[in-house]
Amino acid sequence: MKEVEVKLLGPISQLIGKKRVSVKAETIEDILKSEELRQYLYRNNELNPFVRIYVNGKDIRFLGLDYKIREGNEILILSAVGGGSSTIRR
Image 1: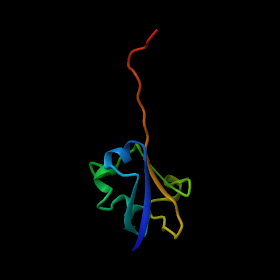
Image 2: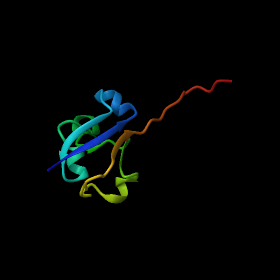
Image 3: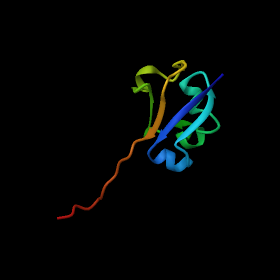
Image 4: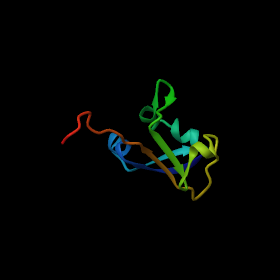
């Protein structure tokens, strides 16, 4: 397996306490299930639907979890942020 650097943005980086992690992986799935990231990305053995993963700016939903990482690939993981107030201010 290769050593892969993964950039983390948003709440996920705050939760982990790092903006980058280095993991050994061959595929995107290997990254997501790595010891360093799994506990933060999965809920009830399912990938959290609010987690977004990009390879060279492309959403992995279109590439697939079995996408083979190549040298020079930029891997980015972020968690979607939503929210707001349940009360309308006037």
